[in-house]
Image (cartoon, rainbow, N blue to C red):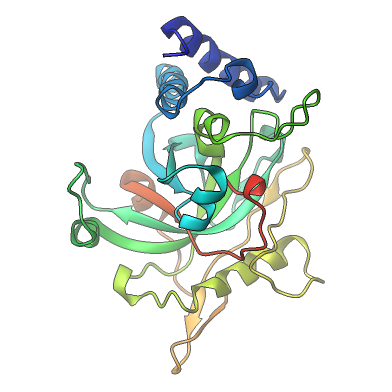
Length: 272
């Protein structure tokens, strides 16, 4: 291993301090060029352990880089993952404290609220369907405690940095009408991006490749409501949901957040 246990614990403390002081640190891949994926996850776990020791509770997991195209662009052959903690959940239509973040981005996602835990290398699609309670649209709030571009070398952040940085997790807003997994028509699910795109810049034409950013740090901003309505043609369009989300149930169940398909025009370094 390129990193000792002391190195892993030191990196976790640096990330924790960066989040608290809102000051980004240098890319870990610059300090440790031979860092491995396993070591990056070890740093992530050490950081999560620090948070748990402070009273935080694990409520779910984020899965990113699920497309083969994005994995190939970043030189990996599997998705990355991070941990969702209880203080990362924000209410549908509630206030998001922007002063808490450093370099925020927002993406439209699907949240799978699980009724039971999944485990094992032999887990199948049918196991996932059986374990999923319901699916809801979600806004993923991303942040990075690590510099995206190194000011000296101009090197961009590597997958090791993103994984160690808890897969860039910062927050999540659940909203809309809960549905069963097989009731979602993924051909039209991209319409959820329209609602997200119009939140920050209503004058722009809807585009799923547009990723809005939160306002600069200051007073809290209100999160947009999420939802969709179904037409007889099975198409969907963003709308205010007539059914309130169930944040209490969602935060008490295991949650897995997976990214939706996006435009290929999105550059790899912009993806979390």
